[in-house]
Image 1: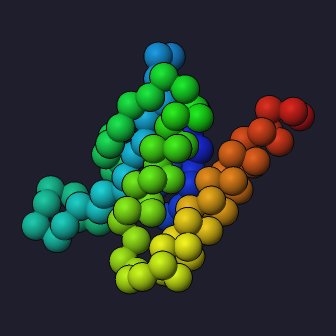
Image 2: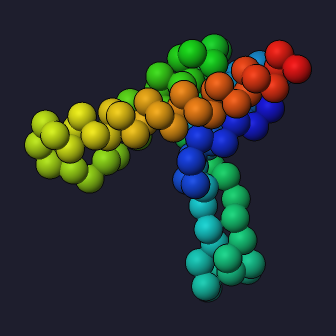
Image 3: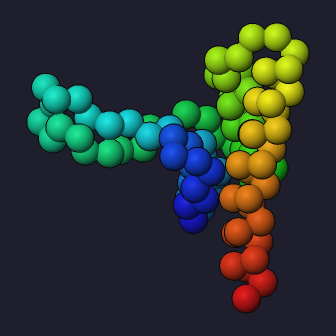
Length: 94
């Protein structure tokens, strides 16, 4: 199962774990310039732990300064994950 979170991140799974993945675009000097691949970053036993880990990473990687920017980063991370997981939940119910 693949759960897109935003343009750069997604959550993937296999039969054993949940995986956070970051988008990688091959550079102009690579064999296939512009090719998009997904790099595994972290591995988790539960979707909840995976989503929590990705949320913390998104917040830490935000480029803001100060409390207001931190709160905005938290809001954006919450919204991205909430939308992604709600979309999956709605698909499961159907």
